[in-house]
Length: 182
Image 1 (cartoon, rainbow, N blue to C red):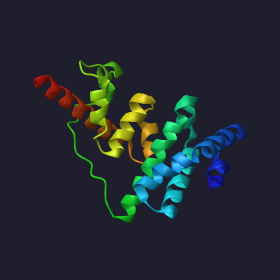
Image 2: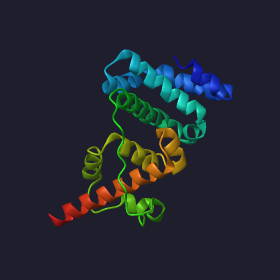
Image 3: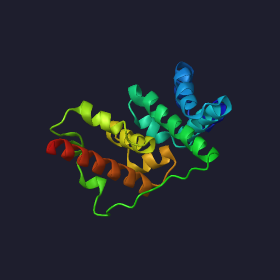
């Protein structure tokens, strides 16, 4: 099913690695896409779209450590499935205008992660965020991808990527402030 994606890759080593990951994890990938789409054909399309997107822009995928590559693919598949579902149901993604003085480059990774609260509380809160926002936060904070790579991975603009991450950071900060006030 991913032969088109493999053909796009430049080296045999890249093709081999992506193929092995696909073969070893197809059930997980199928489960992720099917949980969003509930349709076999759409599920297969989402997986194929995800692998083709990775093959067309392999730099972010191969820059991620080997132990996190399956997680990276999971995010891309989930995003592809959501796009297909939204397209079928004619749902447009809403972007919210944010205060332009908020730039994620101004906030260090330590400031994003460190707090007086347990990671479990913050992770639980992040789990309530929309899927697209969670994916952007994961790719930025856990995998350390640049905004341009996140944008390519999720199929959105760099501006939308920056806004998603800034919005998530603001929501997390407000959540933490609310917890402090309690």
